[in-house]
Image (cartoon, rainbow, N blue to C red; front, top):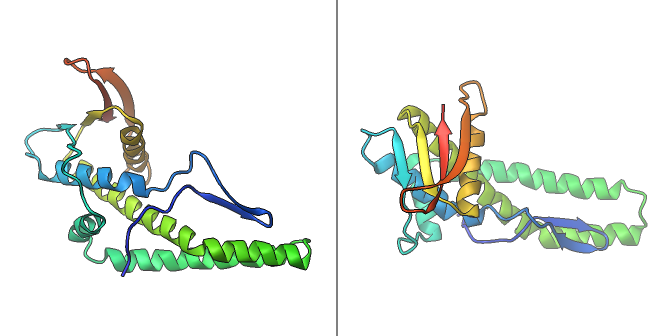
Length: 199
């Protein structure tokens, strides 16, 4: 059974060791927020095309909750993620094969391959987290389009900005794409709010 947990930032692996890239955070940190947004826009009254998302940190979700929520919308989600994970396993093997073809010494190749194998569970968990995140974003897009939602407002912070940017990018991608814009402005209470406008 697939599980969710935080892995860490994206690793850069070579014969000298394992390094981590700043700015390439694990998608796990966005999953709870994505789940809350999905539940919110799906359960709120369908009379309005303008949603102000209010998130309460006390209403936290467990990792199992996050899996159960997306399983409600996509009952075969685990099968899909397992299939996609297998493709990533092939990608890791291709990384190893590429190392074998380099002009490095046998010792350097051996160290590099061992570093990849040591980091394999870490990389696979990052990929699982990312795959669940992608499925959440796609389901949010589907509901936005189905319900003809024209605006999402959420309090400003970097995590919220990242999620809205992912939703916007998904809405603008594909044959049924729509244009979007994002802006930040203070509301009537002086609180900075991010607005995703869907055209």
